Amino acid sequence: MNYADFHRRSIEEPDAFWAEQAKLVDWHKPFDTVCDYSKPPFVTWFAGGQTNLCHNAVDRHLATRPDDKALIWVSTEVDKEVVYSFRELHAEVQRMAAILRELGVKKGDRVLVYMPMIAEAAFTMLACARIGAIHSVVFGGFASVSLASRIDNAAPTVIVSADAGSRAGKVVPYKGLLDEAIKLAKAKPTKVLMVDRGLAKFERSAGRDEDYATLRSKHMNTQVPCEWVDSTHPSYTLYTSGTTGTPKGVQRDTGGYCVALAASMKHIYLGKPGETYFSTSDIGWVVGHSYIVYGPLIGGMATIMYEGLPIRPDAGVWWSLVEKYKVTSMFSAPTAVRVLKKQDPAYLKKYDLSSLRALFLAGEPLDEPTATWISESLGRPIIDNYWQTETGWPILSLCNGVEQLPSKFGSPGLAVYGYNVKLIDEATGKEMTHSDEKGVVMIEGPLPPGCMQTVWQDDERFVKTYWTVLDGKHMYSTFDWGVRDKDGYYFILGRTDDVINVAGHRLGTREIEESISSHANVAEVAVVGVADQLKGQVAMAFVIAKDASALGDQAARLKLEGEIMKVVDSQLGAVARPSRVLFVTALPKTRSGKLLRRALQAVAEHRDPGDMSTIEDPTALQQVKALVG
Ligand code: ATP
Ligand code: MG
Image 1 (cartoon, rainbow, N blue to C red):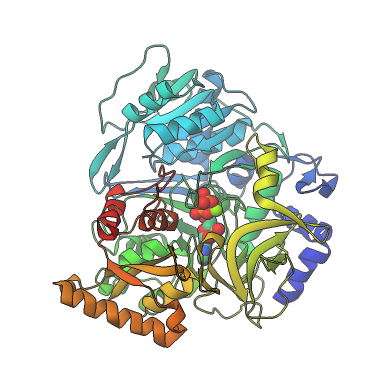
Image 2 (spheres, rainbow, N blue to C red):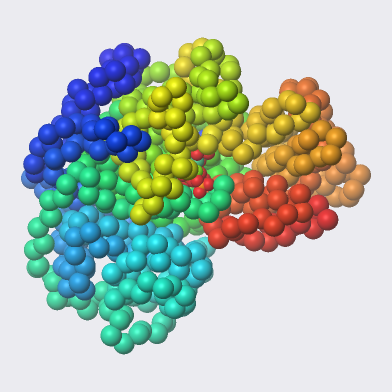
C-alpha cells in the first residue's frame, strides 16, 4: 500500500483506521467507541472494551506457539543465558502474580519495580498487567533521593527489588539504596519482595521483606487467570528521562497501548511471530517497556533481554547474539553506536548478520556521520525513529511494513500513521506550511492510541505542560524543534530550549554539532548557547577528541579549536561559529545516555545546574566547571 494514503486515512478516518488495527489484539469484551474525544485534550481509545496486556503478550500465544522462545535472558555480567518458551514464561508470570496477590496487591494498586536487567523484572511487569496492578519501573541504579520521590509519587503497595545489579563485572548493591529511599519516603510499602541473586549480602527488615525464591516454591502450580480490565485502565506509570528538567510521570492506558504496540510491530519494526527482536535498552526506560517487554511479545516474537555492556567481553557481543538467535529486528540508541564507533570495526564484520532486516535507532539525534558509519560497517539498513516517553511508540519513522521508502540520513523519516504532526512558528502560533521552514514539532489532538493518558495524578500538569489551543485546536508540544523537506521527511534540530539566538539569528545546537562532528578528530560534541552581553547568546562547544594525543599542549588545543571553527564557518557561516571550543574527556549525560545540555549551559553561565538526579557521571560536569572557570 501507498504510505501517504495509509497516513492520510489514519488522520481523516481515525475510527475506521484504528478499528482495523484493533483486530491485531484479543479483546475479552469488544469496545463500543473507537475514539472518544469529547473532553479534549483528554482522549479515550476503545471505550467499553476490555482486554489484558499480559493475555496478549503471553497467554494468547500458548495455542499456536507454546514451545517457541519467548524471553531470552542473556547476561554477560554473570555469564548466564536462560531461554523461556511461551509456556515457561506463562508459568513464571503466574507464579509472580500469585506472589503479588499473596502480598496483598489488588487491581489498581501500584507495584514499584527497582531491579536490574533480570528475567524476574519482566515477570513482575507482566504479572502486574495480569492482575491489573499498575507498575512503576524505576531505573535500577538511581540513588535513594530520586528513588524516594518516585516511591512517594507511586505510593506502591509492594516494591520488587533485587540484591544487586552488575556493571562491567562490578557488583552494584541495590538493597542499601532501597532501604534508605524507603526511610526518606513518606509513602511506605507494606511489603518488599527481594530477588536474591547471590551477588551482594543485604539486611532483611522482619515483617516487611519477603524472599522471592521461598514464595515462588509455594506457588509452582498456582493458576492466576488474567483480570480483564477496561481499555482505559492504567497499565503503568513511567518517568521521562529528566533531560530538560524534573522528570514527568507518564500514565499509560491498556487497550490503546496494546493496539499501538501490535500495529507498530507490523508496520514499523517489521517483526513477525516466531522471529526474534533485540532491543538493547533497559526496562527502566520507555523503549524497555514498549520494545523489550510488551511489543515483541504481543507480536508473538522472542525478545532478548540483555544485561551487560556493548563492549564486554568485546565489541562483538551484540552481533554474536544477532547471529546466534537470528535476530530480525534490532533496536538501539545513537549513544551506544558512538561507543562502538570507538572500538575496532572488525567486530561488526565477524558475525553473520544476514537475518537482520534493520537496525532501529532512537532516543537522540542520529547525526549523519554516525548513521553512515554504522550503516556501512553493518551492511544492514538503519532506521532512525523519533518519539518520547510520553508517546510510547514512534511519532516519526519510516513505516517499511506499509511501503518501503528510502532513508535519508539525519532524518527520522515521515510522520507515523495516527500522528497529525505540524510545525508551528513559536512566535506567531501559525503552521509552517512550506518545506524547509523551521518550527516546533507539535501534534494536533487527539494523540493516537498508546500515548500518555495524563500525568500520573496530575491532570492539570498534563494540560498545562503539553497543550496549547491554536486556532481552536488542541495542540500537543513535543518541545522539539524541526524542519520538513519537500518529501515530507522531518529533521529534528534540537529541543526548543536549545535554540540559540546569536544577534537575532536562530540556530539549532544540533546543526552546529552536526557540522563540528564532520571534523576528522571529533568523537563527540555538545553545543550550548551561553549568554553574551553583545550578541545575546553565543555558541560554546564541548568536544571529545578521537585522538587525544593531538591535544598535547595549549598550542595544539588552539590549533584544533581553530580548525573546528573553520569547519563551522565554511558550512554554516561565521554567525554559527562557537565562541570557544573546549576539550573534555566526558560529557554530562543522563543514565539513558542523553546529553544534559541544560547542565552544560548552566555551568557555562556560572549558574546552578538544577535537578541532576538522572546524571550518569557527575565528574563530567566537574571537568566542565574547571574549564569555564
Ligand atoms: P525530559 O522530558 O524529562 O526532559 P527526555 O525528553 O530526554 O527527558 P525521553 O522521553 O526519554 O525524555 O526522550 C524524548 C526526547 O528524546 C525527544 O523529545 C527528543 O528530544 C529526543 N529524541 C528521541 N528520539 C530522537 C530521534 N530519533 N532524533 C532526535 N531526537 C530524538
Ligand atoms: Mg521530554
